[in-house]
Image (cartoon, rainbow, N blue to C red):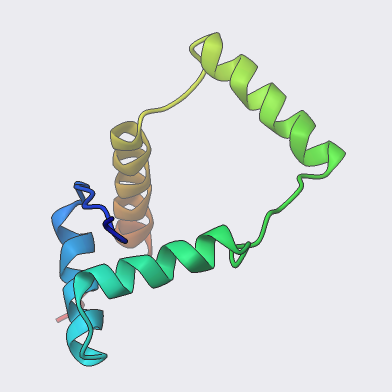
Length: 98
């Protein structure tokens, strides 16, 4: 009878690089590292956060706004921030007087 079973998972490339970096630094296999991470996860090693009433209310309001189409995409937000940064930079730029 086998004591282990093989399991295939897919990870983003950055996560694979991080796993490999840690396993090399600790002289371990990928399997050992992932087993330890899962043991830690299963034992409740990651905190569970219970939102407050006000946080739950804010989440409900935000979900309703998203459903109604009242949101910005990340691209729109970044464009707006970039435009505001450009305006602020040009206003405060020192004038050359030669």
